[in-house]
Length: 268
Image 1 (cartoon, rainbow, N blue to C red):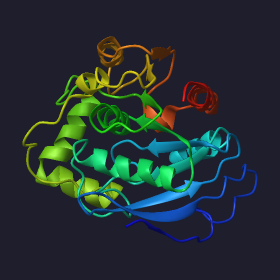
Image 2: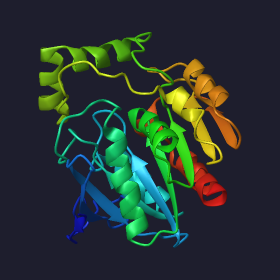
Image 3: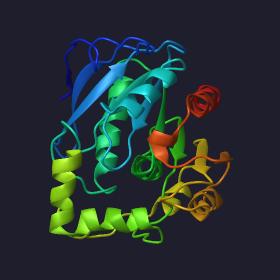
């Protein structure tokens, strides 16, 4: 069952000197494995038939300012359904760091269809980008996919930030730090079986249009991840290598998000 209720917009009143964010209305979703997912719907200020599902990165949240700013910009192109992955923020369950999260994304996609969007697209950042690729390749049901700053493969430890991420995932002290510092609850234990790698999922997405976006200043995943995802995918596909762009939501400029929004509107 999918329930929803309307309350005042996230973040309360806009602060002086800042552009007001588009109003977002909370929604509670349930996944196929019965995990409660905290979500929000921001109505469209652009194409009324286009829904954009926004999937955040690891330790992110729909309530964080970078995600809210991205939601506001994307709502100029379509209605936005944002949500917290399991184990993040106010959602239930524990994070499996890209495995069972495809069920969370699927619940958000189905909700976008339920509330009337004829075209439903997905934008995912970092872990959310990997989940977007896996969802489109394994479950399908979307009209276009944009994967931003996504890893191509699992267990990558080639950069210092990713070694820190693995410490947070694999060590009890790291999981405690993630829970206390980032409100992220991580499931203990290894994957069994190991889920399909993002680049392998990308090979299954066609004929759904795919956009791969990556920065040449990404401190987490070097450019070979973007090239591997794009190279594995069949047409229609595009690859944007963004000069000076770092990693995921916090580094994304409004202009980049607008370009992604225009791409979604034209390709879906």
